[in-house]
Image (tube, rainbow, N blue to C red; front, top):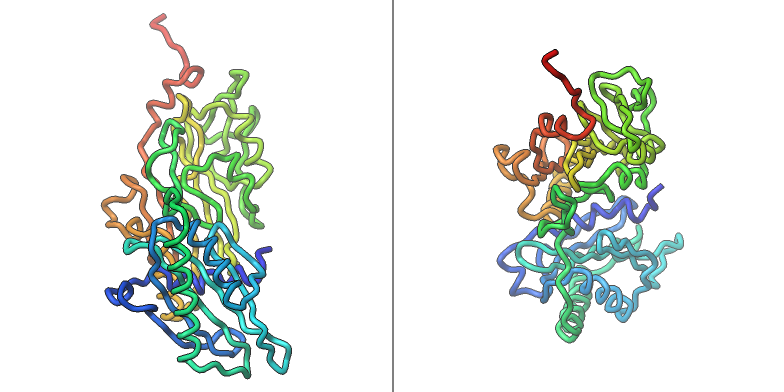
Length: 355
């Protein structure tokens, strides 16, 4: 189970994607005041940072926050985020909490900060804004003084069809990434929902014409439709050397808010063999999201995926695309129909003669 603070990661990450012309000139941008879930005040802001290395900025941000009197108690490296508490204690024993993260946007590096007051504790807006500025200015100086480092990619690198890394960044959600193999997905927290048919494979499986070839050259039949469970995922890559014909298969995870994340697989050629890789990741959203929460989520998606977000529908399946619409966030990698090429692999097609 993901800890409670990490569940709130979308709340602070949502502001990262917002950029405006004022961001470069002012100490802070998009300073907002609202209410947190506990009923206290919530303050959020953005700050433009120098440099291009997200990871370096993230590490330095933890140092700066600590120097400003906060105790960093939890980090989320995969989101370049961290949580800190101060010494301010309410009558009920609650303390204020600072959430901060760094991200790369099309306007450069950005620091996102959120401060949540416990109920019954008041903090003047001016004082909070000044403190945010102090953190941001200190971080800017630390980054400027730090040794130059190789720039961190916005979201990593995606493998090519041959399996070699490419210049494209990795596109991920909840640790699931486009291009992952079944063995890699098996390491994630996937589960088989109740009542959902399981994807099956083996020499005696009732096939829907989907099949592959085992390492020993024997034929492996696939069930027509179904969802992978963790055990099936773990064994599939070892039991199937190459895919000859494939219909569809899925895996399922849960997002931090309990909504489902569906992972779908497609065949892709790597090292001369067709294997299954992740081609589509769909994260469903709660039906009761407010307009402001939806905007925050959209801003977070913009910060995470940059120019990949909401490309035109004509680009779908041609280039990597992230679509946010109709109550879901969908990550899709390019796809080429490979059915004919897959049958040309050794053992996939029957040999015939004129006799």
